[in-house]
Amino acid sequence: MTHRIRVVYCTQCAWMLRAAWIAQELLTTFQDELMGGGATLEPGTGGIFEVYADDELVWSRAADGGFPDIVALKRRVRDRIAPGRALGHADRVARAAPPAGS
Image 1 (cartoon, helix red, strand yellow):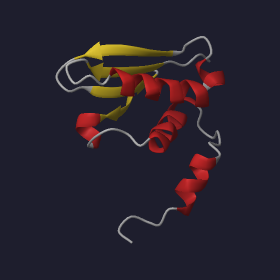
Image 2 (cartoon, helix red, strand yellow; image 1 turned 90 degrees about the horizontal axis):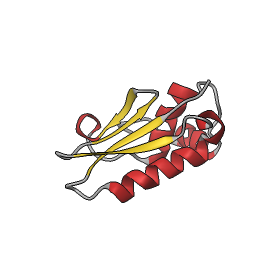
Image 3 (cartoon, rainbow, N blue to C red; image 1 turned 180 degrees about the vertical axis):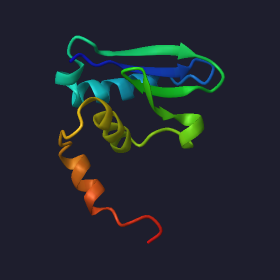
């Protein structure tokens, strides 16, 4: 199945470079899953920064409280487009992290 990533960013806030970096990271990590679908950057305004995987919102700066940590974002994208796929070091970091509130 072909998958797509869409990164919507605020042009007024000059977040295009951040959006491009995130798209590049996701294209590198999920190159097989994104073959034929790819990643697109979509200009917006009003402080928007959102990441969609197959038209499903996986990160919103407004709802999630800021910009995504790339490892956390990769996990969310993986859960949407390639559940069960190992992320290597990103999965090891998640398992080694202490529980929240420790």
